[in-house]
Length: 114
Length: 115
Image (cartoon, rainbow over all chains, first blue to last red; front, side, top):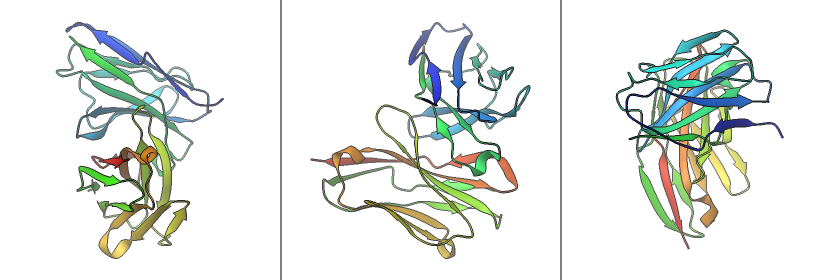
């Protein structure tokens, strides 16, 4: 089945540690996105990539980094510079044409920093 | 600037009642796209509908219907004869044709369907 995989579902880290969240898709989509969801805040865009080896900052990129070395993969690293990293993180992808198309979402990773 | 407002933070209705979720948007573009997504307790967002700015026809899909009115910049979502499985958070979203890179989500409306 085609879809988006995010792992793990739950992640716990100590304060000050970097952590990488994985996102893999087998939909052959060009564009991929990372969102952060906090209670009552809706989804906020962290980073997005419309093509391999290229990515752009979203609205809340500070404290995060990404890479797009393969079309299928768009990992997100939450660095120690992120002041409040505890949140629910969602990865999404879409066909070429970007945000005008429906986005397909993964199941999300809930990160808790202790 | 893009903006999506979902004024209803949380709604509770009894099963079989109809319920409407409001969405008001702001954009300076004449070409734009509106979306509704459902987020069940599992967390994964599920696409429900996309509308472009040139298509004001209302749409019905089973118990779901959408009312798009450009005059009031609204794209409201109605569930008829609600069921417990409709309980979820619903997001309205907007993207602009000249900003093809990003979609702006509203803050969502949490819908509780009580048995």
